Length: 267
Image (cartoon, rainbow, N blue to C red; front, side, top):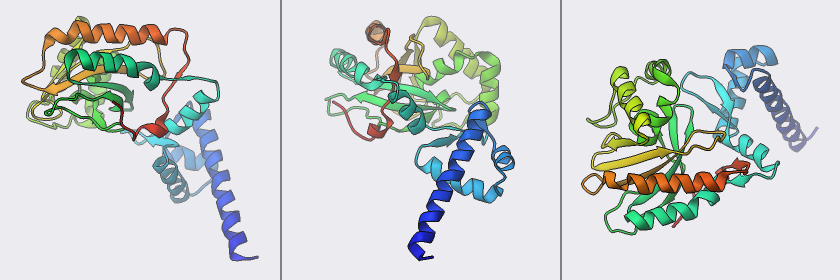
């Protein structure tokens, strides 16, 4: 047998093994440890790990802070697009641009993924001094305004588990890195309908965030980011109005996020 044939057979074998691992992941409810995946598949843990690592690099699966594997954004997106779903970013983008023009600051659309907030769309301020988030970048939930709201949805015990998993790393001297203080801040924010990031992710940057109310596959937030000295809580009604408009446009839609375009910029 030629070298090219051997390589072809090996490639097919890897694909077959990946399919087996994905089937097991589905049977386990979409979440499983390496130990479980290796044991059920009959693969050596080292072999399973290599295949899963490659799949993770290609966004087919993700590995959360607890070390469990889950279906990744590419697989989720392909499944959604197969059913004719609408792109969340395309729906939100014109409203985000409207809000950006009202406040003259950067507007971000964020989803919850594991223990992180992922920036999936932006409308960037045209001002010389502005805040820019890279589409596809991530931040720990407790360091962002919308992330606090996302954490609050699941209650105090969930925040305590999040704190234990992550250790609440402090990105700045202002980051809330005690579980009780985080719960109090998150609960207060959820009750009043918006949250603040007071230089907790980056010195000099302040944010205001709200959540979308439409049930989606992910918790989703909308935020305004600005230099801290320019941030104004008077923007809250405009931010809430923008979120309401997006929610209205989402009614009756089956929604996805086109993850393959996350590296592109928007106006």
